[in-house]
Image: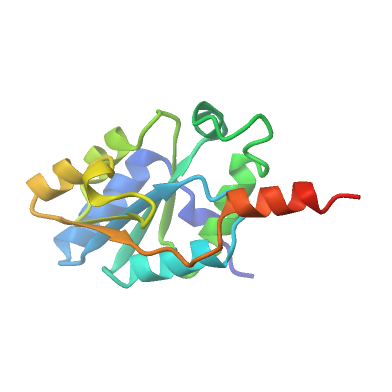
Length: 163
């Protein structure tokens, strides 16, 4: 049986993985998010992010971090351990690291990726960590989203479809 739980790691483990990959000449990509109610738009974004390098590290908002974003009292819908298990099961994702701070800035600085990616709802000038990654010679991308696919839209649809 395939065990993808090994992809879920502490920050120190991810940093070690990244340093070894970079020392071997590999390009490391980083993205982050809540990934609550994983949908095809998430998978598309992660696949495109991974195609920009050799290793994809995903910073996952902790449950407390999601609640701090004021996404609503019912969020996250899926607890962090389950969200981590789902995204770790994706082929595109090489490492999953939780962060509880309001932004992933500290995690990005620790990882020091070669490429930083966010979805197209984030203009490049507002992407947390962009200035740091560029200062290290890296690249920053805001990738277009799949129209009509969002967790918020799914939650709204579920609420309005109840009898």
